[in-house]
Length: 231
Image (cartoon, rainbow, N blue to C red; front, side, top):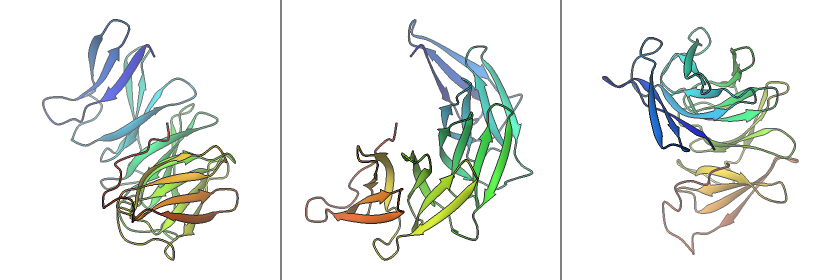
């Protein structure tokens, strides 16, 4: 890794993208105040296939696109497609330079094409509602993106090839809020969900959309984990 890029929120007086060169230990703050303003604008980012860093809009009305080779930032306006605060949380890079944004409070899955800087909001309001829906996305072996349920009573399954969303109901197996926080693909292709307040480990088979649980209440107490990172 030659350069590591991070984002600072635009709470005055700082409004910049932070770039750290690990070969020289040099840090550069790239000013973006001319393009965006506010606080809690972006949450997390991912390297797209075209080499650009895509920043996930949380409160921002734009997708952030950062070119680490030239230290240039572009704010791609999405206010005509999605509004409000705490829109998306985390993202997953998929083929064809696309990036999938996981819905947090937004009523849509965000799909950003980094090759054309175009954004599509795929409506899911008929399948799942509420805030703090999903935290953590994992690309399954069949290419679909699996969304880890935080407050949602379903596992989200998104097909980026067709922009279709399926909510797989899990309410009969696990309930409550702050269920899981992140996940990872196991060697057998199943997706393992890390328990936050749930008393079980969630296991999702993306090939059949089957969900099972492994209870751990006798082994650990509340707030079992903070995060299992799919990367």
